[in-house]
Length: 168
Image (tube, rainbow, N blue to C red; front, side, top):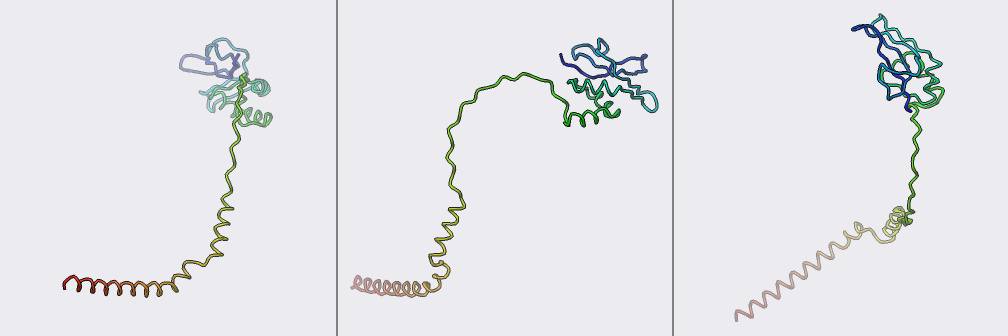
């Protein structure tokens, strides 16, 4: 049985006042109830809220769920703060529901990847041992440039000789 703390409308037509009641959630709004724990008169100036704190705290501890409006009234009366302090939770106590346990198949262990740090350290060590390409490039460039110029001159000379032989 789901127990609720909610408001039950009483009073004349167009002049509502409410009782704060503990009731079975299946019963109608103004129907059967378990216990009256307070009253709320919104038309009075200021609104009147009277709640039996001991009984409201008892029902909250055994699992009664307040409706939104009843929860606001419990906060105004200070019952909700006392409940949170007593239980030590911010949320409303959830009703106990039986859950069927499911069997879970074991999963094959996943091999751990090698740490990336080791690879980075190995690359740094290799870079320290080999001469840096930036340092070797200036010394090699004139040699490469001279060799390229020599090869280009040799090819031009060979081409000139080849064209001279073909024309004769």
